[in-house]
Length: 323
Image (cartoon, rainbow, N blue to C red; front, side):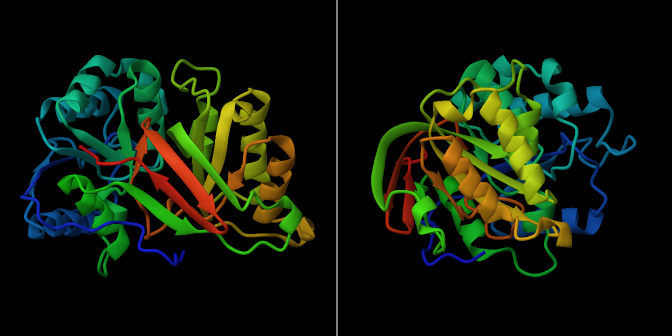
């Protein structure tokens, strides 16, 4: 993924932060990545606290359901500046009824930043639906800070901006599209809308439950991994038929990665899905947001009022100061 912008307004003048690492989803299999991630955060000057069950294993999960619920509640009670998940995977949707949402909201009110990606979408949208509290779509410890090489500089700068209170928004450039008639308006502005979304498959799994936020007039961002474009379309049709998409002021595609097209597709690809969606809803459909299962990911406030402006291929999401 490449962007012609520096999506983050970097600032490195903050003091060290208390970061709490916990595992609410899949078990950590790559212990080396976990250790590298912890060391990287410590090297940046942060105090890293590791949950007692961060490396627990129960079949594919990081401990049984009760263990992972307890980890979430310990994170909320830790007083940390940031609660950062070790990794995504699967496991949060099955424990959503057991989460103490009031405790999470109290932690957010006191300034705690809950940060994560992928399966964490379930937690973030449930928290938004149940309490209205804002969490952050962003990195996870193992895949982002625990890489063998250096962590992505944009991701790290955006994380730093969040910690320092300098994060105000993100800009990116959309690709040129050959189907000009299907392209969004070249110039428009949405002065205020609630930003929400995350992993598309997880979002679709929340339809019909009390854990999908009822966001009217929002900006929905989506991403996914290992999902062929037809599966992406099928997930979108679920949101469409459930009436979710018609209520949005804009839909923003992040990165859809690690899928393989097949001879049977005969030209059907992700752009086909984008074009199809533009024919289904009146709201603009934007693409190429630098967020998803990719190294270069910005941090996005799930549940916060934002401003969206588009000029030509340049898009800007703005939410003002993080604190």
